[in-house]
Length: 334
Image (tube, rainbow, N blue to C red; front, top):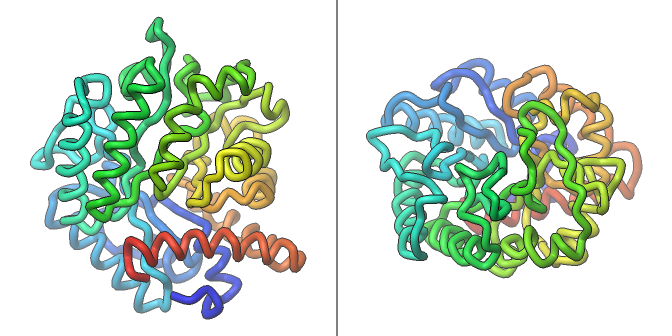
């Protein structure tokens, strides 16, 4: 779909990816697509019953978006394998990233996962986890990360990215610029990582640089405060992290997505107006809101207001939506 054919409301809504309740195209999901013009949805266990039901849900959501004159939806899921895998049996169950012993394990995971997601109509996997944990193993990500060696994490992570995307599933590397050093869970509150950029460049950022070179479809920014990069804002709200470091310094030209804005790390400290202002100004492309319908409605209104405020804001918004539409064109033909 050509960006010039999109209304201001569609430009605003394309920058939202949302969760919803229910297992079919119900009133809530129709409202999100028709009224908030969302660019994407994310599936959780609450949306998943059987393979047939999941496929019908995805197909009906895409059909309704088309009926509403919307671009095709990004339909995402957290399918990392191991601890975080929304799809249960009869789908293939994997032991998780820490259990991988070589690149062949990563290839097998990615190829099977891509096949199963494609068969359902899911087109984006919120994986791989590229966080590097400390050698001590003391990390909130210990059960989800590939390991403590940046080179090893890079090798396995890029195999996952390559083989997901070769099989037409968008990969999303997470959680930029790396949350392996944290022990406080950002689902609960806001962690701080007190590490200088030089150290991050030698460790945490190494797998993300490899993901950039691999042309990863999406990059998820974390709800962590990296106080030696930006002492005021966590990564998911920080222009210094998302724009200066990821885009300008590392050269990433793909789609940037926040982690779930309903998490305690954000909700305990910032109101939705501040959150959206920071995201939009930082040129973070997609705000991910997984639970609160009220937050979704407010975010849509604020995104629309942002566009209308100035020609500069409109240019910023158009750049983000162009990146989103480019991704959809490449993977979805829309």
